[in-house]
Image (cartoon, rainbow, N blue to C red; front, side, top):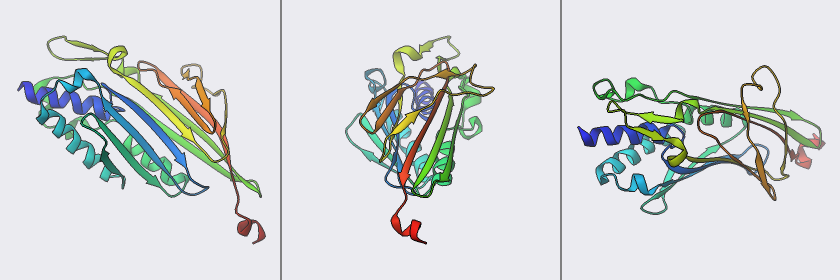
Length: 231
């Protein structure tokens, strides 16, 4: 029973933006129609103490989820994984991101009722609007991650896992021309945490905050191929 409980905690935490690990989630655009979602996952020392069977089960389950969005996983080291999910256009990015980074259905986890572990519930919403400006394509990316339930994880024995100690999450955006950060507005902006970004060349990185609704909004562009303009 202890081993099953460990596996369940790892699965729940891992699928919820890979909690209890250090995780970097990146969206990389290669051109106006193609790109990939890249996530690097590194197990912390606390999770490294789990049994090999628990870690193996977590990896197998993660592989199944990645294949569901036509992605691949690569084992970088004993403690690190890299997930790559390709997308072909803005709509494909929206679909795959929202499918992969949304909570798992508790009914899919056998034994969840008998273990009585409180499963965190959260939501992820990425919206990408694209407009053709003759010589460039304007992209407006709006991302909201509700991580309020990841502030703590609890078990029936009232063992609380503080996310401040176990969660290290970030979101990165890499585009050919760089990006411009916007201040989110609208009805939900006041209730959201506007995450501060760090810029390194054409790469923007946001440190996500567990326990809050994280909001990211940015604009970036792509050059339109000359063949498109001449048509």
